[in-house]
Each structure stands twice: as C-alpha cells, then as structure tokens.
Image (tube, rainbow, N blue to C red):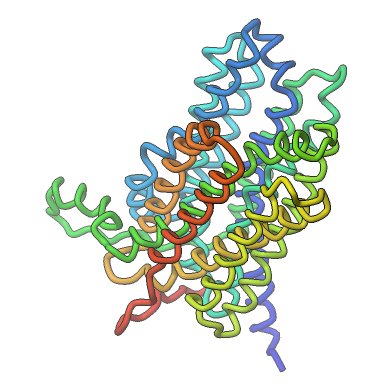
Length: 406
C-alpha cells in the first residue's frame, strides 16, 4: 500500500504531466484557430486569401532555424524558466495578433508566437525527463507525442463561435488567456529544475560547442530522423486526405473534414496511450516499432487505393493515425534513455524538434508534387523504412538520466 507521502508525490507528478501536456495542446491550438478563420482574417486585413499560407508557415520557422541551439539554452537556464518565458512570449504574441492592423504586423506576431513555441516544445520534454522517473515518465513521454493533433482539434473548437458575427480577434484573446492561466499555474506546480553547470573561465567557444552537443551524438541524430519520418508522412496525409477522400469517394468536403478530424483525435490519443503503457511494462521498443511500422504501411495502402470502399479507407486512415501515434510514442519514450552524460534533455529535444520542423517545411512541396496514390503509398513505404533503420537503441553501460525530487 502506498504511504501518504508516496500518494502526494504521485499526485504531484500527474499534475505536472497534465500541465505540461496542456502547454503543448494550447500552443498548437493557434493553428486550429487560424484554419477556419483564414478568410475572415485575410478579408479584414485586405489581403488575398492565399497569403494566410505563408503566415501560418511562419509559426514553424523559428523552430526550424533555432531549435538545436534553443535546446542548449534551455539546458543552461533550466526547463522551468524556459517554459515560463515561452508562455509569456505566446501571450504577448496573442496580444500582437489581436491588435495587428496589417498583414505585416500579423506576420511579426506569428514569428513571436513561433519563438514561444520553440521554448515549449523543448522545455516540456526536458521537464518530463528531469522531473519524472520510472513508468510514469515513459507513459508521459509517449503521451506527449499526441499533443499536435489534440491541440489542432482544440483550436477548431475555440474558433467555432467566431466563424459567424463575433469578432475573430476575440478568439486570439481567448487563446492568450488560456496560455496566461497555464503560465500562472506553472509557478506553483513545476519544481525548480537543474541548469547546465558552467566552469568559471570557460571560453566562449566551449560554450558555443556545448550548444551543439546533440548534433555530434549519432544516437541523437538517428532518433531525430526516426521521429521526423512519420511526422512528415502524417503531415502530408493531413494536407491531402480531406480532398482525396472527397474526390475519390464522392463525399462533401465538410463530411470528409469531419471524418478526418474525429479519426485523428481518437486514433492519436489511443496510439500514444497504448504505446506508453506497453513500453512502461517492459516491452522492447524496437519490437513494437517494427509492428507499428508495418501497420502504418498497410494503413496508407488501404487509405489511398481507389478500389477501397469508403469504410475501408476510413479504417485505413484510423489505423494510420494509430500507427503514427505509436511510432512517435516509441521515439519520445526512448528520449530519456539517450539523455546521458553531456547530452541533456533540452539539447536532445531541440535537435529532434528542429529536424521535425525542417521536414515539415519540405513536406507540402513534396506531397503536392506527387502524381497519384501509388506515389503516396511509395513515399510512406520509403519513409517508414528510413525511420525503422534510423531508430537507435538504449546506450549500453550508461545510466538513464535520474529525476530529481518533486
């Protein structure tokens, strides 16, 4: 039976996991908010509707350009401080977006939002690795991999009341208030975290080299590639699935979009949760990864083959989303086993997120250039094989990063 102290510690740990997950969900909700409000925003700012595409892309630019260096900075100042700074930047960005009178200022607000997002997507896994331990950390890291689609769905729900007569800028105010509440909660829930210890008299060159420690670690690079591949395939699938299902199976765009949204949130949450539970109970990550990779390729085939009836295509979509959540869950759960020695959690998370962001920039151009369903299946097969080959193993002879007391 657990003692009262152990119960308090468990409750505290779960509160930390819930808060950290909400940080990711709310940060990604912005993209879900902007998607249905795009025409209203461009209309009020007097620009072409197509301009919103670049605006949304600016959200990922800071992560694609600076996440590796940002990871080293998070290790230096501590993940708790990084999360508080990131939340503050996002609140300021929401204010800037809500007040922006022109597209140029709106774009600058998106860059500021993206800068805050960098701190969150690095600071959250770094905090999990530093403050949690045992099976809970494994489950939390796997579950964290699902924050993207969950956040997008939350954004859609936030945006719904503002698609009519209500001022769309109020949706951004609501987003800022949610992030402000999370930042305030973090002051009381998150414990103080370790910082990278620096030696007195350490040269500037040594400090700069320390920022890129993850790039020089082969296992870290392999993990980044392994998780970037399913993210690219999933992003490409998200870009084309709605219109593809609508065109091939003769259903309306609204019905197709609803189907994709429901399938995404159910299958992703299920995939991350199941993988976290299996890994926490000692199932070998490499063995699980082989099964979910194979399932993902089969799912992509069922989704895209024109001969598949609509119910089969929808099942293929859900199976793919489950497989994607499972693949990301395995990779995220492995991160603490690699964060050893000089390689701290922030640096590792920074490298992983930078590679994912770079892949996200390349994905639209690749998928929109593909000629048909055979190419969609082919790129899923190639990307899955690359991911399988890249997946590293736990280091031999090194101890997993120990958590500190909560």
